[in-house]
Length: 343
Image 1 (cartoon, rainbow, N blue to C red):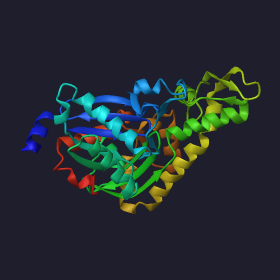
Image 2: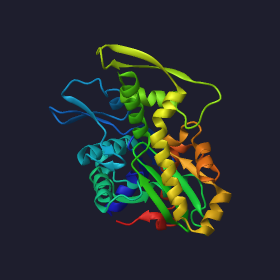
Image 3: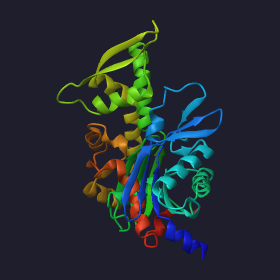
Image 4: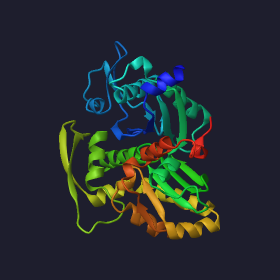
């Protein structure tokens, strides 16, 4: 009886619980939330001040008693209670017109491949404590493949590379299962750190994380560009301690990003080497699909094609591939039950 009441007042939700951003899909409505995975907390009162975009504005600008926390690091929960509060905020935002004590949604959540049982259980418990009635988990490369409309249930090989904020998931999928995979803790956040380290080493300039991310988006690339791009970067001079502005080129940012890009390509090659020959033949025809925000780096798909020898292309709207996959699973959970991760 209670289950029917909760079902009546609650909407089924698909969540891409990312290190950098959380996207929420609501059954029948599509993607309605896309906000940074950041929570601002008052340490004196333990009160949540803001979540998402508002909290991101506070990073590096708060007094000592207010902290902006990323509750997920490298794709897994690092602060259980804050993750729970963040999920509750998103649940309430979806059900803002309903009675909150009657909101008990069914939830599909994307998690990185290769996480431990403890990390998996943490996601499940956080969602249930935040108010979920039922929690289903799906590995992010599988969700991204479904979101990219790949024929995952057929006896053909599909390869997906999901480059997020904290992790890169690489998987070869056939007959609704993962044949070969790698989970790499190198992705968008590591690229930002590479740029910050490069500025420190070569220009004695202390950069903030947001400034590094902005310059990566603005002029970052994996291959030389036809026209040189430049950007102004502002930070603190490590020698004088005073503000400093420098002009950087796309070649310099490319040099900074090279270690992370090479590490990702090396893992892609290893997964290809582990793939059975029959599936390799399929991959040569169907190609490698890139998803996630990190895949938007200029020239990355061309570099993967050159390095691995398999045609590579971006999925349609790479940023939302995982959450769209969670949404497709939500719409017909019984037919796609085989792709879910059993706890």
